[in-house]
Every structure is written in structure tokens, then in C-alpha cells.
Length: 244
Image (cartoon, rainbow, N blue to C red):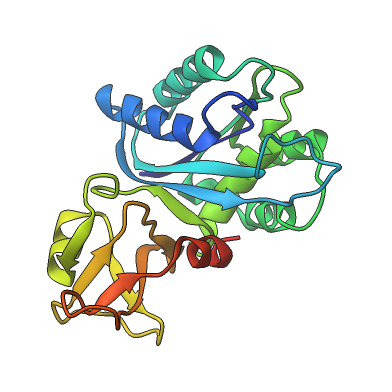
């Protein structure tokens, strides 16, 4: 069974961000042999002065194959209670993919454009039978956690904070190596055509696949600066722009 585990508002201005905690939580779930993690994604929500957020107002969603949802919820609750930063408003949403309804997807899409409320988030969770709980502070993170689950279900929002090999490999690799050694599923040129020809690609220290058609897609562009590789990952600014 495929499940989504989303968290939001776990940090303060001095702590590491929610994405960092999401990666740690994913690692813990695998270490307990409760889940097979396939990815951790970042989803950008509305930036508005009416919304209390720490830096960028983004939420994180872990995607995993798992069966023991109650045990996973217990580990997540324990983790957030102990690891959320002082003054944070942490929220947790856990749902099997099949339970993520069109209403939850719409919630996620609205969260990118509108100011939403906790009461509405809890009402939606009750009506759709997904787990939603707040920890610390106001519990306001439940809004973003629910949104991240909905946005992840679309298969076309955000960028990956983790896929297999993403934080291990950098430098020049060919397409075959990237597709075999990392969690990247598609390498896509700016012309929209997948690269499958063994071309050499420069992976910088910071590279992030994007979520596109439910796959981890590495976006690249032609290189004209050197003969040592034919392509390079699109710039950090471009990745952030297309996943806003």
C-alpha cells in the first residue's frame, strides 16, 4: 500500500527546516522496518502576511510503501513531539493514497492561493477518514500537512528533498548511471524529450528532481562550455521557479 506522511511548521528561526526533519523521519521509519521510502517532496504554499510561517511556507511529504499505518502514526507522533522546535506549530497528516480524495487535492491547490483555517482542515480530515493532528503551539501546521498530502497526490507539484542517491552523487555521470544508481526515473531536456542515449550530465552539489507525472524527473539543459559533458542540470533558481 502506498501512503503519504506529511508534516509542516516544525521549525523556528534558529532550527533546521521542516524538510530536514522530514528526511530524518523517513530514515527512522525505514530503520524500524515500517516503510519503504520512495521519496520526500517539498510543496510550496501561499506566502502571505496573514499566514504565520518561519521562512518560505513550504510543507514536506514522505511517500512510502507500508502496511502498518497505526504503528507509523505512533512513531511519527513520538518523533514530532520530541523533535519539533520550540515555538513551532507542528502538524502531521497520514493517509493511504487511495483515501486522498478530490476534496483533499483541492485543499492542497487552494493552500497555494488562499488563506485556510485549522477548523476546515480538521473537518476535511474527519469527512475523509485521514489522520490529522497538531503538536506544539497553535497546531497550525495541520493546514500545510493536509495540503502537502493533496499536492503530492496530484503527482505534479513540488521538488524532491530526497530520492535514492540524491545526496550521494555529484559530478559528471551518464544517463544510464543516473537512472540505475539514483531514484531519478526520467531525465528530461528543455525540449520536453527524455534523454536515454548515454549522454554525460553534470550534477552540481545541489540538484533536485521535480515531481512530474508522478515521477522523479531530472531537468537538464545543453552545455556549451566544455567538451567533458553534453548536459547540465538546470540552475537552482530555475528549479525553485518551476516548483513554486
